[in-house]
Length: 116
Length: 112
Image: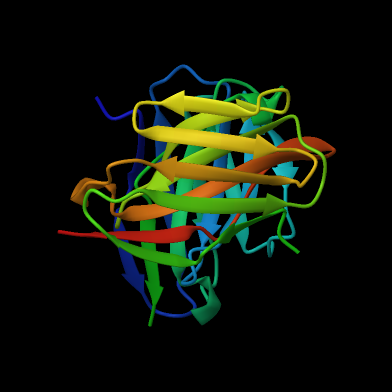
């Protein structure tokens, strides 16, 4: 069984469109994350939710809006897509929000977003 | 600037050789983690070393931590083609909520 699953795996769309990425984890974890990995492999956190509550919101344009309907799901909606949004977006989860450095994070396989 | 930086950025060796990757960080840490990323896949947690540990082993992996130099190394012994991947170190920083900060990784290629 896949622990952290993201859909879709590939997303190709035009500038200005709105798109969503879905993420689900079946590990029973309380905390979920969205990361963005650029073309140079630099991985940067965007958001973190703990049991449906937003706890980290990095300096991300407000065109990006995460939503967590329950602690097993964390979706990412992106409005008015721009060329610079092209990247790989990873969802991850960990046991809980305390002692983040003490806990391994479990990653999905990423969503490759390409803006034309 | 980034908390963790890996060195070298790319490493190519022959199968069977040992591979060593280094990570330097800036602020004090409680723990340091290493992850592997295969091409087209997500990151996979390899090993966590605590600040009071100097060395840790897991199979063919050996991780060292030198808190005085703010550096860590990952050694893969007897490398295999399947070890070809990018390797990242990650440390936790606390700015309000805790978060993991990753370096840019070392791209390791094992040649048959």
